[in-house]
Structure formats: C-alpha cells, structure tokens
Image (cartoon, rainbow, N blue to C red):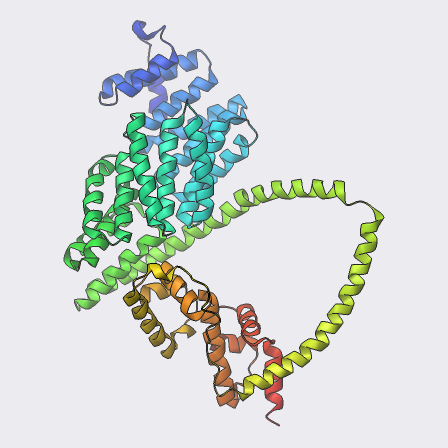
Length: 548
C-alpha cells in the first residue's frame, strides 16, 4: 500500500494553477475540501510533492502529517512512520519529537495505550531538549491523558491545569488545546467525586467554545456532563445528554467515548430499574470490546452487571459466557495497564524526580562542607547507638505489658480510634449511612475480611455503594482508613484463633499470614505490629511459653 502511494507521488505533476501557491494556501485548501475527496487528494499530493521538490524537510513532514489526518485508517501508521523518517533526517529535536508525538496520538486514538505511551516518552526525550513551549505543553497534555486512564487523577489534574494556563494565553495555538484541557479537567473532577466542579468545568467549556467560535468539543462537554449527571443520580438527564452527543461521536468513529456513552446509559437504565433496556447497552459495550478490545477499569462493571442479570434470569449459559468474557477483560486490563503504569513511573515520573534530585544535591554540596558537620554526625551516631540500646530495653518491657494485657482480654475487637474528626459524612444521606453500616456489620460477622486481595473497590461493589461513601463512613464510624480497618479485623480474628486453638501456636509468620488472608507475609508483620504494638514473633514466642 505504501509503495502505491509513493508511485502516485512520482507520476503526479503539480497543476499550473497551484505551482506558485505557498504551503499555507495549500493547507487551507486541504482543510476546506474535507467533503470533496477529489479536491482533497489534489491538494494533499500538491503539498507533499512541492515540499519534496523544494527539499524542505519541515514541510515534507507537514505533508505526511496532512495525509495522517486525512488518510483512511489502514494508511495512517504508514504516514506516521514517514513523518519520523523525515524528521530524523533533519536531526532537529523539535521535528523528531513532534513526529513521535503525532504517532503516539494516533495510537491513543485507537486506545492502544502501551504503544501511545512508548511514543509519548520518546517524544518527551527529544522535546525536553528544546525551548518549544507549545510542544512541551502538548506532550504534558497527552501524558496527563495516560495518567487519567491509569487512575492517577491528582497527578493528571496538576498537569492539565498547567496546560490550561498555557493554552489560554497562547494566541497562536490556543483554541483546541485550551478546550481539550478543560474537557480533561472535567473528566478528572468526575473521577475524584467532585461532581460540582465537573459541572462547572463542563459549563465553562461550552461557554468558552461559544466565545471562541469553536464547536469541536461541544458534544464532548455534553457527554462528560451526561456521565456526571449519572453520578449525581439524575439518570433521566444523563440518558438525554449522552444520547444527544452519541451521533456526532459515532460519526467521528471515536469508539472509546462511544463505549463510555453506552455504559453510562446502561447504568442509568439499570438504576431506574429498567434492566431490559440496560442490557441492550451493556451488550453494545461488549460488541466494541470484541471488535476493538477496548476496555478500562471502570467499564469492567459492565460484565459484572451482565453476569448478575443473567443469573437473576436463571440463564446459566449466558451467565457463563459473560463470566468467561470478564476473565478475558481482566487479562487485558492486567497486561495493558500494568505495562503502561510501570513505564510512566519509570520513564517519565522517575525522570522528573531525578531532575529535582540533581538540583537538591547541588544545593547541599554548596552548603555543607565544613568540619562542624562531620563532628555533629559523629556525635549523632554515638547518641543514636545509645538511644537504640535504651529503646530495645524499653520495648521488651512494653511488649511484655502489652502481651499480658492482650491475653487478659476476653476477645480482641476492632475498636473505634476516634470520632472527633468530621470526614464530610454530613453530605451523605443518613439512611444510606445506616444501610452501609448494617452491611459492614454483616461483612464482619461473615468474616469476609479474610478474603485475599480484598480492595476498597471490590468491597464497595459488594456493598452496592461507591468508594467515596465507603471510605468516608469507615473513617467516621471506625476511626481509620480502609486498609487499616481490614488489617485490624484480620489481626483480631487471628489473635482470637490463637487463644482458642493451640494447634496454631507453632505456626510461623507465613502460615499465620495465609490463615488471616494477607496477600504477603510482610504486610501481615506490619499489620500485626501496628495493631498490637509488638512484633508477631515476640507474641508467638510468649504464647508458646505459656503452654509449659
């Protein structure tokens, strides 16, 4: 296919009417002829052949970029690679970085996040060596999108706010970059549960688009607000807004946002107790997964609800089908998101951290060179050794006292540490709080906390609530964070077990960890010490002594 394109260029002659036209003129004609394929092809070929005739590497790259934007999907990657090949010939960091960024954006549009990230990071390695502020912020924006997909919302918000400030002031490139950044900010606010700020950002995006005379992002702001209305419980409004935006999104072949739209329409119908309608939309999500293998963590619930529906209909065949589909979804999520998550921290966040580290090291080298510091270090080390000896003796007494106190208790119980702090629970309906507390009590009595790899997301889903509510209610009523709450339940269970059954007295840390459902021995050791104030090895040693 690539050879055919090259052949067309070789035999193409620029018409006399276009021979003396500049690149800006040709670019404008390409944009204007969007709906006329014959004219568009003429201007695309003219632009590229002219740039090659002039041996203008920058414009050759732009020529391939024009083709990238207007070519059929199966040819886009060819033009992206041609951009990179041309840019490398120029040896310009700006052009090479820009070319890799374009290829990354192409992969991102296909939701191939691993390939997108690879190209973004290569782009960043070149662009960071330049002073091209537009490309620097364009790279930041695209990396913020990856962070959004990974769930690093606070980090994404920080990058996006920088982009908004820059693109708003950049008079040459501002409109689309500014509106895109506002849209991404609204999405992040929704994911962290700040639905009011999400609505405000979407409204601002619509107003700014109108002010700038740019309607390209209008349906995306409306889609974003439709999803936001779902989380606010306004299901009818959510369905209306998403349905309004879908025709344009489908026309753009934006299958990622089309999937999101179907999912939240389905969820809205589900919550309106119209499960038959909901299932139709959940199946649309599944159809796109079959075709594009597109999925992200929040869409996983699509398959849980399909399984739940067919189980309620006593349809084991369909139930099994979607269980197998969910396993495939989990496999895709694990491989795709694990790769992207590891690379973004290793190649991007780590690089940023090293820049800060280098700066700090230089500052330290200028300030701390005299002998007084060395003497201070020696004195400090001496005192440190003395203090360690004292702490060791004190800890042995403390451990003994805590052991005795623990053994005197009839039963170890998860206690409320503090109720003095307000965790924003007043925003939650009291009936909802009472219902979740009742379900938590059932969860504790059923010893479901012994489940390995239990996450806040899994528990929230099983209690039919969301992470935000669950976190606030546990913090307020249990006086602790989710992880501490679960760990304390496991440790209390284990201590009671050890008191009641001597056969566990010879268990080591690994076996005890398994018995209480910890994901690792290390986590068990830390949790035990945090809960009891003594090491698990000390407790077990003293417990065995009491047998004789």
